Amino acid sequence: MDLTREEALKLHRQMWTDMQKELGDCPEFADRLHYKSRWRKRRFPKEEVNAECFLCEYAVHKAGDCRGCPINWGAATCQKYYIESGVDWRYSPISEILALPEREDV
Image 1: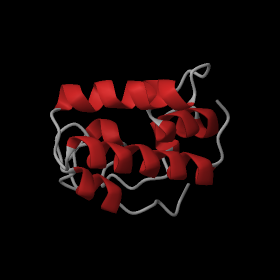
Image 2: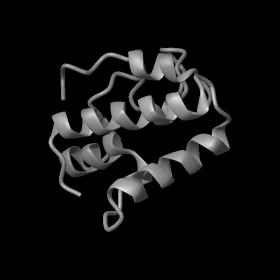
Image 3: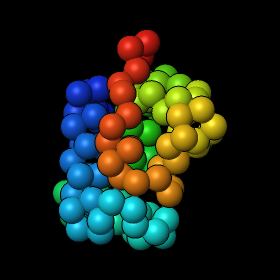
């Protein structure tokens, strides 16, 4: 799936906002994983999306790896989880995930 930065950010925010509305602000990790997969399959049934994450999909196409992520997770990538920002996509409230700033350097 070939996404622009703006498209990746928009889809990221839409998916997490929808998840928050449907599952609450702090769903369990497994519920997040299942939701991401279902959300993508409903909207893009013929597309594969890296890690069911539009930011990952964009980053891999842009930079070849997670360093191209347009969101500032407070660490090098979201794979370093909450080391600096305190935000862990697996467990943090969705409101905190949605509040993360964009990176200016990618």
